[in-house]
Image 1 (cartoon, helix red, strand yellow):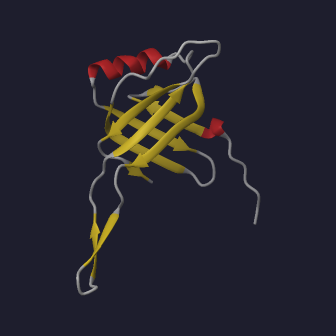
Image 2 (cartoon, rainbow, N blue to C red):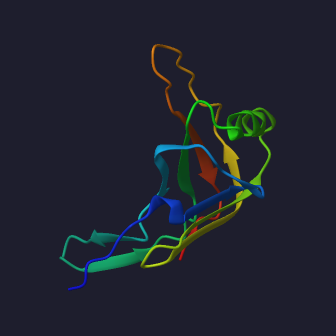
Length: 131
């Protein structure tokens, strides 16, 4: 098996056409809000698999406190605007996540202290597409 290399610089994140810079250590986390399938077993042992058509998802973008995009994302949180999000990892294997409508649930929590703290922005994705 060949050794591969992951490079975080090969991950691109755009929100409403704006490239996210000054990403925090955990950068981005993408998750579906529900499983793709569910199963039920009847009293006689018959199993049924049901496809779940829920396309909701959660995207968490972590920025450093000094990122120029914190002001932009705080503004989006205040307006509730629905925005497109694109996340592309150009690493191997190439993976693409797209959303045509997402909104920020709230502004990121703010911490001020001896060290700079990351800010986490949580989007509700209305039509998460993991490709």
